[in-house]
Amino acid sequence: MTKVVSIVFLMVAGLVIACHTQTVKTEKEKKFMTQEVNKTEEEWKEKLSPEQFHILREKGTEAPFSGKYYLNKEHGVYKCAACGNELFTDDMKFHSSCGWPSFDKEIAGGKIKTQTDLSHGMVRTEIMCAKCGGHLGHLFNDGPTETGMRYCVNSLSLDFEKK
Image 1 (cartoon, rainbow, N blue to C red):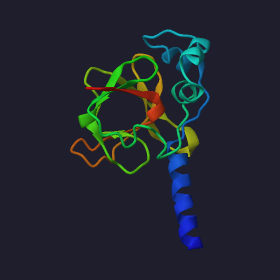
Image 2 (image 1 turned 90 degrees about the horizontal axis):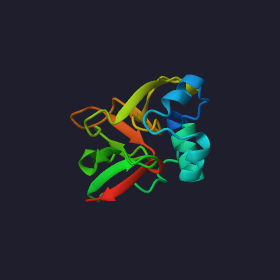
Image 3 (image 1 turned 60 degrees about the horizontal axis):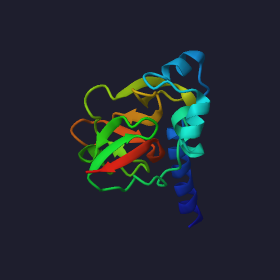
Image 4 (image 1 turned 180 degrees about the vertical axis):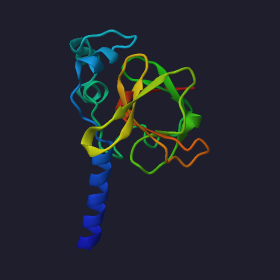
């Protein structure tokens, strides 16, 4: 029993480390982070909850299996919680068992920007809202649908509008 608990603990710890992206922003990144919506960090702090600010502006990650949209099956549109940019629809969402909402593609039109994330000794693709530069999560090429992609997104970086 102790061995099973240890294995489960190591698996959860690995997931958290793999998707955790708290990094220090360079001046170049800070400029990129204000793509179309130009707000100071203080203005973002006033608009967002502390948890949302940590994820969207400081590239944090919420705990796996804790987000309110992880198991959401309602019909509608997922938007950036910082600026309202429409990012995904419910038909793009799939259950990936990774602990975060997962999508196989984004809404067309350049709604999401990507950049290489070298934090934590790994090479990953970070996904950000193209309108405000907010950190959403990461993009992986291990999705089970025909696109082969998995947009792994923090629930706190999203708002959901029912349709």
